[in-house]
Amino acid sequence: MSGSNINYMTLTFDQQINDLVAFEKQLNKRTWKKEKNIAAWVVLLGIVAFIIYSELQRAYFDWGTPLVVLFLLGVAFLFIRRMGNSGKRGVQKLIDKNPNMIGTKTVVVYEHYLTYTSKQGTYDHPVSSFIKIENTKNHIFVFNGKVSAIVIPKRSFTDESQINDFISWA
Image (tube, rainbow, N blue to C red; front, side, top):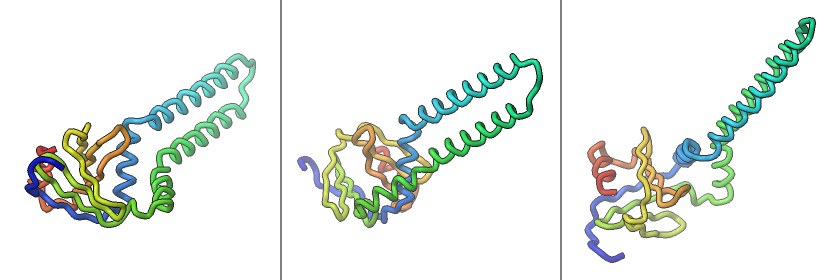
């Protein structure tokens, strides 16, 4: 890389499955899965409204219909909840295919770029390639694409001031 080779900061950490699950959840906050949950609820509410409307058109009350509605609500709740918790299973499948996704990682921060090193190799990322930095409770996500980021757990920093220095650098 061109530019200064002054090392501003070196972070070494053990990338764990929970770090990748946190990244998956961060992506889901902004992507189609959230919309998919909303669509599932809209469809379910439409079915419930149709059943209630149909029941109101009848001359007598039938206890079977409310039980069917409760059953459908329960099934939908469990289905939507399962969709929301599928992150760890999905990440585990990716790790099974590519075990190098977890393990020791090193990020070295220079003036105009950072170097990311893992078992897969060493990659230089110029600051200009970062499209967004997201700072959460336990992680910093350095996005270099819409769905790709360098995941840096905050446990890899020595203190809060080092976290702030990193964010201001990026």
